[in-house]
Image 1 (spheres, rainbow, N blue to C red):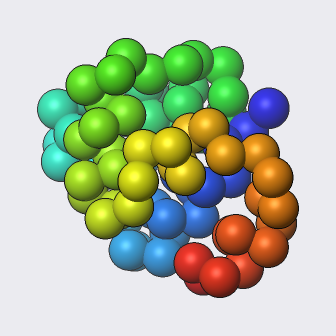
Image 2 (cartoon, rainbow, N blue to C red):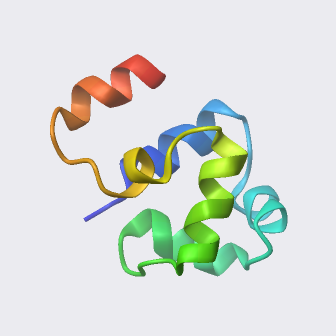
Length: 75
């Protein structure tokens, strides 16, 4: 399942996958895997992504209730 929140936040900040990868000390391919839902990032990467996006880790990776509504509020 795609991680729509990571995708939405990255695009909202006008960042490429490469730029986001550099900000979180991981590779562009890892960002692509996280966004596609093919890879669960380690806790350190989750925390770094949440810090870059200025959102809670829980919202970025765990909250399933009202998913679409939450995305609309952010974007």
